[in-house]
Image (tube, rainbow, N blue to C red; front, side, top):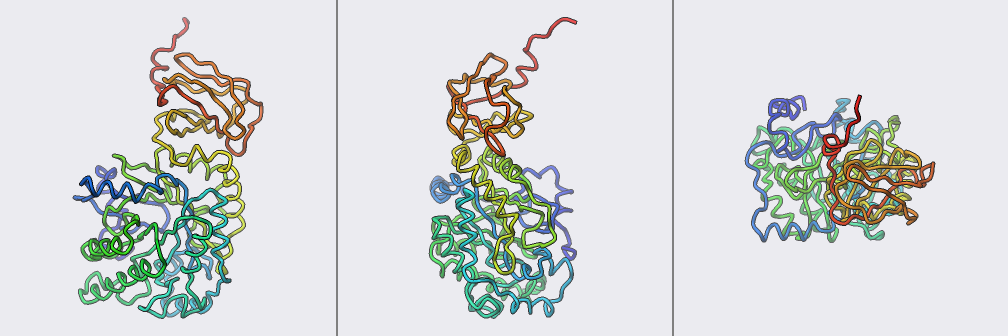
Length: 455
């Protein structure tokens, strides 16, 4: 933000050598240009066998899930000009706060979100309980600036939780530490009394969220400006969270490493096996932006999902409901087509293993055990090939139909032949390739060893 002494963007430029160690990425949008991840320095993480075992237990379902739905919904939806409209347009609190009376969503709007998520093949959902604007979508004793006491007249988080559970999906809560509405939200940086008041306010919200709604599977912190981990008392915060919800997993945006990293609007695998989740928008906005028509196609969404799964990451894809809670038609259309593809090809995504093969100019890859999945996004016609596959192929089939695919293999390539002239699946065709062992690829071997002809 403008009043930060050192912005995240400036910090990243000055510490390029330690970029790989950061827990979250800089992005082009406003969503998290602030200090949303731990700054450089010692980053304690669970290293004891008991802590590692507990993390593995808590995160097992999450690693298998691969695909989730993000929901950004709040007062900004009423204006329809992006979730950062209050700050981007410099709207005073006195002018913005009356939107709380105008925010009157239809009952149980979240049922349609959950049904769409399940249909799309998503296994968990994460909803904004409080975004940066400070409005609470949940029932709280700390403020009247909340859904039950304003326009909605009811607890929107409760409706969301019930809808998610009805579809058999996992429940996630997003919560922004930053607050543009609370009087101590900025002065807490330089006034110790304000900091203490504000931190207790935030901790109280988390206690309510993790006490009043039954089992919660994910807590997704967001922007930690203007305090550091010590200022937020993040160790105490997480201790409370795990005491209330022993099975929960938390991200890294309260200035502690947490259980997983959160690259935003980009796909970037973590090193050393650390868990990660790429969160992205379907257009260029998180909240409802009525003029934003830069929609991702279903093929783009599937390719992103494949890229995350290839490196054992998750893909958290956002919808920004309208003020009445209805989902933009473009989001419904895209996720419906993605869901149809997942119904045919989902086994290549869920519970995937690290995949070393990745070189092709018309396909991408995922792996599960000794099965290599070749996702052909630009269909080449009757023959498709993989260069430098070092593992012997036993069999191949079109994943969607189960139809066997003929192949020929030598030490430089494997060629799949007799394929249809037109792609047999849409928008991406997947070939399941059963190998003798874990598949690996070495295209440098091909470059170096393939016989050259004379001139």
